[in-house]
Image (cartoon, rainbow over all chains, first blue to last red; front, top):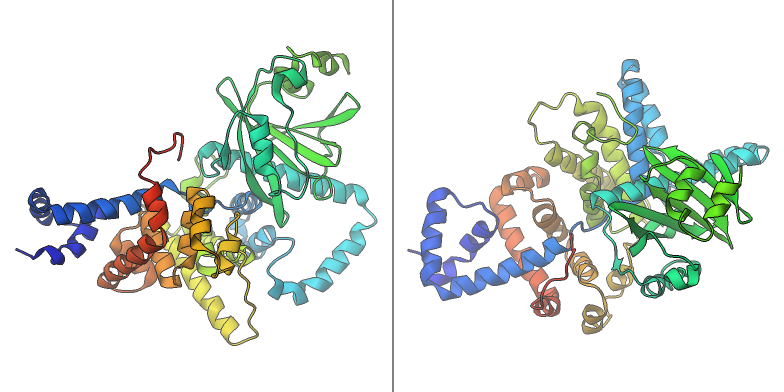
Length: 291
Length: 188
């Protein structure tokens, strides 16, 4: 039989489920009678539990997830052309607008050339920017749904969530103070928020719940994100852009220097999807009146 | 292999379900967001064309982590032969805790949420400890799988993991004392 201080390695093996059946049985019997080993095991288990509670260690940025998914999709359409061509196309799809600084020299000329040519097509630039924002919003929503992007603040209080974002995002974000300010009974409720990487900075992901559906609202400065394209729904002096992307309903709009992207699986299309939340509200008429 | 718009049901074929894990591993190695993204992208560039050749039941996860580590080692070799750039911007709010070793550790641990304290503590570990903690505690790889990723004997995995945990326990001593309180609900 080993001495007490020889059991440290065994405790680790036990913790990591690496003991053989026979050793496991023997160690369990030892645990019954050795308080020192039980104490040491408890300490190890406590550390392990703390680490596991903090999973995932990091969440991949929504934009990276979107690029990988897009690139993976391109795989199926390029396999017939052979690996070399696939690799080139795949790498192109994955290429980020700004790679690490070490690539600047090689990229500078390309960026200048592309930027110069795109100066003549502002509509294209605007649409590309809008698409990028929507892809980020959809990827973030999907990660939020599958649990890989957990909320960093959990609260149904708009003031608590607003306060949490203060100083963390490069813009002023103030969530409306629930029903009394909105002058109607809200059919959805705030659940919290978190930061999402977007274009080298942070955007705010605000999470809501309606019935059993999770809804996410990505908010960013209009300097880095624009709302464009899709089916346009004018309301209250704003233009809401509706589109279906990756089986999610996405509505984007800009107001007071911020651009919003609302992503959900709620039923309805176009203005009907707005009515899902707003039909029982005082502003519901805006969405049903406009054609 | 085919891909749906939402990627549902396709994860096994592409390894996309390991994206967070690979990104975490890349950040643990590089401690730099831009380099970590490059590393993950290059991993998928190399892996996806070969996915079809991976035998059924093969260890896709361990294989992906091995690719990422090899890409990282190759890049390190290139950078050592050229001008070096050192950036430490790992974040989600913890960059300051990594780049400021003089920061008062007590203030750090009492002011930040638990998960951020854990991230900050892990990033304070030496690289070999950071990666082994990530592979075991966050990715649930077995000793044999870790040994395969790190290309080292299983015995080395065991001893290194023990030393890494001891070091980490010291760094998280305040947090561990605080975690005696009841766990918060809804934590994943």
